[in-house]
Length: 58
Image (tube, rainbow, N blue to C red; front, top):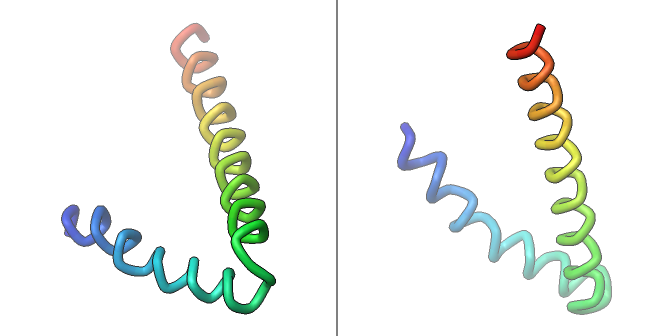
């Protein structure tokens, strides 16, 4: 099951990327969406780390 969790995004990602490039106007939209997803992921990790640190201290 762990292997599927690692490889599934690598299989699905190119198809999603191709759909974004072809339907939303090129690579600039792909980079914009990738940046937004990265920002959301970074904010989610930041929140988890803050809670884990507070739990360890409290």
